[in-house]
Amino acid sequence: MTELLKKYLLIKWWIPLLFFGISFIIFITGIILPNTDFGFNLFAFSILTLLISSIWQIIKGKKKTGFALLSTALTPIFALGFMAYLFAGTMNKPDEKLASERIEPLIREKTDLTIPNDFEILENLIEHTEGAFDSDYSIGLKIKYHESEEKHITEQIHNGIKSKSEKGIWKRNLNGFDFEHNENEINRAEPFYFKVDTLSNTIELNLMHL
Image (cartoon, rainbow, N blue to C red; front, top):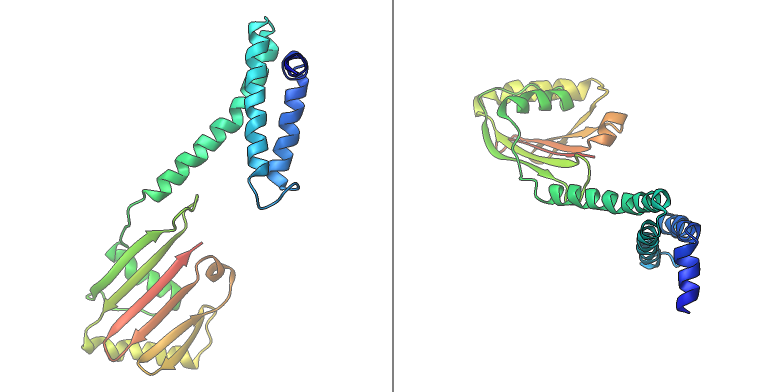
């Protein structure tokens, strides 16, 4: 048995390489025993086999073949390590806040509503999506405007109700108004919920960047 393994896994260097390629395909596609760890475990075993074979080839003086096998085996190891590093980085991202000078332009960009600059920030938080490898995040924002500014704000909303906008439509609710965004390309990437509460003089924005 030992001689057989030595012959086919060590001396014949192309067999571990072929095994590595086949196990990689199985791991990526999941064609055998899907929804289990079989593909990953098989791929990990093939990497170990390839490492052992590369060391054997180097010891036996076949350095070019050995280092070629070694570089092939180390590539997925470094790739997985890099992905783990990125994942750890996203887990440790601190929560942030939206800069105050960005609040008014963001609301205007999304709804065409112009708000006064002297508002009070009640809630302001940017949370990065847990486990995401890219820049997925959500914004939770709640501000309070002065009662004297309500007429200016509601006039814009009433004008928006009468006219059609590519960005969305205003709808009345018991406490004020909701803005329902259109399902265009921009809003599919950044869906949001926006409301104006005229009873509490507050504006709320919840946005998800995908």
